[in-house]
Image 1 (tube, rainbow, N blue to C red):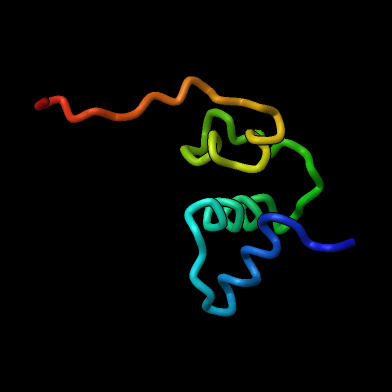
Image 2: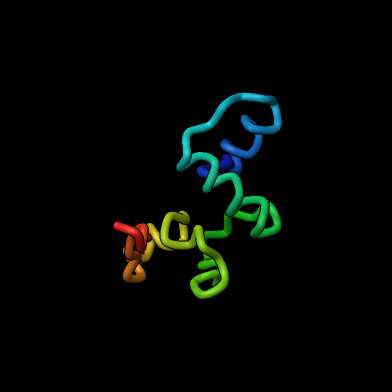
Length: 74
């Protein structure tokens, strides 16, 4: 079985290759998930600030009501 998403990104990162933001998130999710890409949701919906951008959330079409943080002084 070929690696996908996070696995490829994680291997590239470990070799010193610079990653895009999304590739960095995919690599983080891969590592956090015990280096597994089983396709199951990681369950980080409430505990991970990167979850809305994770492969799990993208597969589910989850937006989670992401609201941009605004400076209170403006």
